[in-house]
Every structure is written in C-alpha cells, then in structure tokens.
Length: 397
Ligand code: PMT
Image (tube, rainbow, N blue to C red; front, side):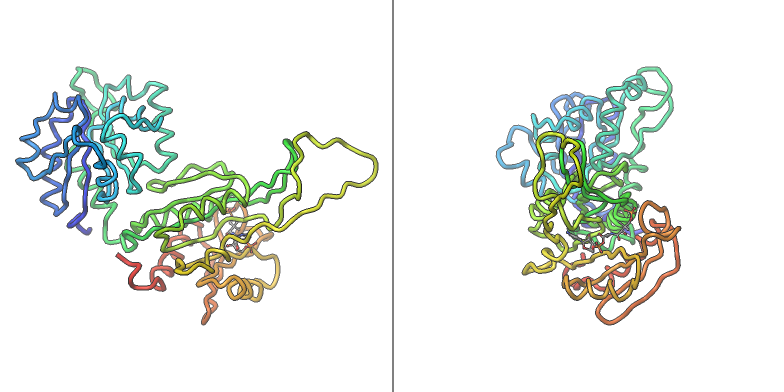
C-alpha cells in the first residue's frame, strides 16, 4: 500500500468529545508523510487545544482570518477530512451551509470530502441524521466509521469515531498504489437523457447508467477527481464521485461545458438522445383524429464537441450497436474524433442496456480488441487501465 507522502490534508475538527483523538490522528498522518492544516469549528476548541495540534506538526488555520482563506484551503487540499464530524456538521453540509471557515471551504473545494462521524447512537440513528448521511453519500462524500461500542455518554451502539489508525489506513487505501490518476480531472456522462414532448411524455431510452457509473467508480478508485453527469437513473453516486443530475441532452451539454477548465479526461457513456422534439408543449397534448406528426430536431453531439476543443481532454466514447458493431464503432471513432471507443452490442442478453454484465470491444486508431463478457464493474476497471496506458504522460500524477 502506498503512503500518503506529500498529500495535503485539510483536517476539520468539530466539537465532540472525540476531538481529543485529533492530535493522534495528525501525528499518524504526519508520520505517513502528509501535510496537515487543521481548521477547528468554534466548539472544537472546547475539546482540543491548538497547542496539542501544532506540537504534532499541524498548521492550525484561524477561523478569524477568513478573507479568501476558504478558497486557498479549498484549492490546496488533496482531501478535506473532518474528524470528528458531529451530527450538526452533517446537517450543515447536507444543506450547503457556509457559516464558518470549515463549511465554506467544503462548499468551495473540488477535493474529496471524507467524514469520520462521532455522536451519540440515538443521534446517529435519528431519521434526520439518516437523511443527511444518505444525501451526503449521494454527493460522493466519503465516510469512515462510525464504529460501534461503548460511548462517552454511557450508551452502547454505533456512533463512536473510528480510531486514528483506522482513519489513516482508510486514506492510505484511498491513495494506494492504484492511485495512478491522482490529480486528473475526469468528467463521465452516464444514463439516458429524457427529451420532453409535453409535461407528461418524452423520448428516452433503456440505459440504466450502470456502465457509466462503474466507469466513474473505477476512475475514482484510481484517484481521479470525477464529476459524473448523469441522466435519470435509480442509482446512487459511487463513493468519492461528485454527481450532477440532468434530464435532457441540452442540460448534459451545459454541465459538461461548465467543467471544461482543467478537464483531462472525458468519458461519454451516456445514451444521449440524438434528437429532441422541436417544440415542448406547455400543456399535455390532447388526442386528435388521425395521425400525429412530431418534428424532431438534432441534439448537440456532446462527445464530438468535447473532442473538438483545443486543448482537448483524452476523449473516450461508447458505441451501442445492434449490428456491424466494429464497423459502426470505428466510424464513430473517426467521425467524432475520439481517442478510444468502447463498443457494446445492444439487444442481446447479457450485454448492453440494463444488464449487470457487458461484452465490449475496444477500438482505437490502430487496434480492435474484443473482450470476453464480464460484470460491468470489472469491465470498467479494465477500461480505466486502457485509459491509463494511453493518457498523455503529463496528465498522470
Ligand atoms: O447504462 P447501461 O444500462 O449500463 O448501458 C450501457 C450503455 C449501453 C448505455 C453504454 O455502454 C453505451 O453504449 N453508451 C453509449 C450509448 C450511445 O448513445 O451510443 P451512440 O452510439 O448513440 O453514441 C456514441 C457516443 O456519442 C457515446 O459516447 C455517446 O455518449 C455520445 N453521444 C451521442 C449522442 C449525442 N447527442 N451526444 C453524445 O455525446
């Protein structure tokens, strides 16, 4: 397992009894080679002394000096780790509160956020905390713990903060040898788009999002900073992946465009509708005698547009085909100017839309390689390995 050597950790400490463990956590992170800047909430100061943190090598950042500090820290961080994270902190992050340095930098950072919750077991199990926890997981916030056991309040159950060694080990795992895409900003599109015709009806397709979500998860496993732009699916965001939900192709394009700066890798796994109704009726369309003719207009081709940028990210597309898989997919590689195409058959069992497995063929300008069928999660990891091999050197960590 690789060490967190040289990693920059913003350690947020909130006001719970478990804050007494923060100096030991700093000591372990520093011993592993990480740089640590600590930010204390107002109430944390009642549980841990600034001197104890600086003595073990943390730089303690003062809430009072705020100014542009939240932006500086947000950019500096490789991770924002909050330990302990109280129920109140979870609630504030869930609603996007920005009323002190710690919550403000959490809103401003693009680095992963990892929480080590600590609270009384009834508070942890309260429906409000459950809802906040779920919402934060949905947004790709990482959680380590809480552990179960005797609590400072005399109760027994879930809510104890994980031990510093366990939290440090979690970060080591996160930044393990697998982290070959550390620092690479990646955008992945996934799922279907829905093109409204009227308030009740629209045009969509059978994409479940499983393939694209698996690619996003596999990229995050390799340390990439992943933004997942997802059409409507029933899936939850993979750990460590920031997700933006969209409905139509136009919305998907807008979100992708808004994240152009610094994008080093783009993977278009979404099944984007090529057409949308020319007009969207504000009222539900009424039945009428005879046939109904709807005019469809072309949607923007997102992956082709991304591939045309200068500079451009390494651009990967998918191709969903019912026939002549290789020929059609190669045409897409060339016409859309892509670096790599992952072609998959649709309309056959065990591959394509909705399935947990897939059978893909990898196509680049020189080669066509057909892989055997495997779970989408495994295929996604293999795709990421192929991306790593091809990614221009300066886009690696
Ligand atoms: O979501 P699952 O149920 O897991 O199923 C996976 C999948 C079959 C949806 C996926 O693996 C897949 O093949 N995704 C691409 C489907 C598709 O729209 O293929 P296409 O051949 O129509 O498009 C080719 C490429 O252009 C794709 O990268 C697509 O994202 C992109 N595209 C297409 C149209 C458009 N307007 N904008 C685009 O960016």
